[in-house]
Image 1 (cartoon, helix red, strand yellow):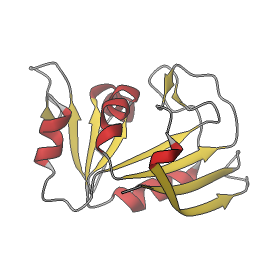
Image 2 (image 1 turned 30 degrees about the vertical axis):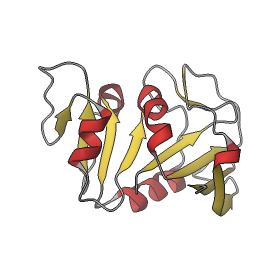
Image 3 (image 1 turned 45 degrees about the horizontal axis):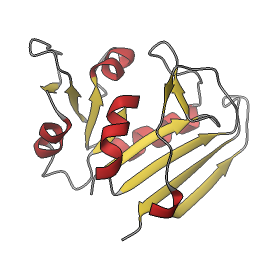
Length: 161
């Protein structure tokens, strides 16, 4: 099973200036719990916005730059190469950014989708989800609190067979 994990604003925005726009510790906990122990596949810009490999995961970076190197990570040059590398993982995760999500979308079986109930100004977007192709199998709503400024919903979508 190949999965995407993503957090989006109401307008499908996922970032601005190569950074996350929001800070939601509860969603970050969900991300960590879901991806720990797995391969995480990302584009170079996403890796650079993190600033380091994410711990307890196999970090795979996709870049066209044949000379790119990142300590603690595996560097590949195509999504297909990344997926093949993760073939022994029962659920590798695509974690961004926008271009990687777009090319991975037709290939994934599951989407872990955090929808933040707020419109943000950004420059990077998640592709539209064709709801005819997906079935929601889990949904949890979260209200804002002292640590999480915005209300949000975490859903799990499985591709219809």
